[in-house]
Image 1 (cartoon, rainbow, N blue to C red):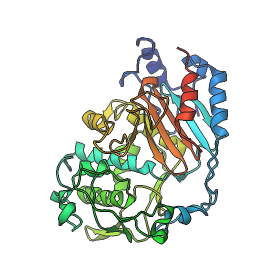
Image 2: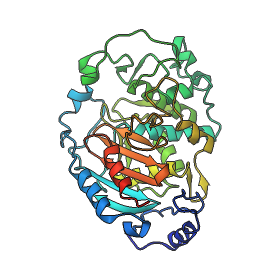
Image 3: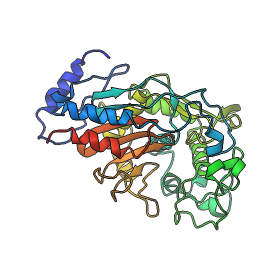
Length: 381
């Protein structure tokens, strides 16, 4: 990484004028340019370097037990529909405090599947759709998506908001997997027993088939592949690299404007999914920390960000495909307004607005809060 940019110096100077301990105003914050992210010694930002180093050593010692070669993939999740890499990186991560890199460990440039962190990325694409007037959150999806997926029964009642909160109860199959999750061959250790469907909006269930239906619905309203929207409207504006890729299933293609285009998934449960490095994950988390704004550009509507980080009626402290901490249970020891994008493995983007903090921690064991609380303890009062 290169030296601190002139913009960063200006932002730092402005930050000195803010009240002690206060959050950075969006227009005063440092935003890393493409291909660079300024580093600062932790002590320069009021952190205890020894305590931060101890937190990093803890994180490095908590490697996941997931197989490095993904040989446990099908037993865990069921028959694959898409490709997988031949191996993954070891545990790695980044600590971004007040906008600056204060710690890095492991191979943070390694492009790996990030599993269900992709769900929070789909929620971001939905925010762009809302900004552009392509969807209305409380409107039935079938009003604008007419491919037959919302033609009858419960499905006709499903709203965009219910998809985002995983309370849709959408019924059907997507790319060869049925929403009931019955059967060990199809769903591995995640298979479930039959149950009665509830009314949309009345029951929470974490369900990748329904999320994949949601992803296809976003493709339909944009009339453009979701990865293209994500790149043009989110990743390019925040200066992400060109190394990430959203890998489709081998059979998740639909016709769009006379061409076959791929619909992507909300995870890597059955292969494919978002493959990305830790730096790009950190930029994504930093966008949300800054309220959906990046260097003067409002990428997501502020009201949407607020709603996305508010708990649903029936979920386990769950927002719009983000895990919340309003009850203090999902991220023990962290503030009630902390939140995280969580993927199997574990792959985590954790945001604590009270501490102006973003943490990326990949391929770790245990709750991400175990690392975050140690980082926060290094912040001098």
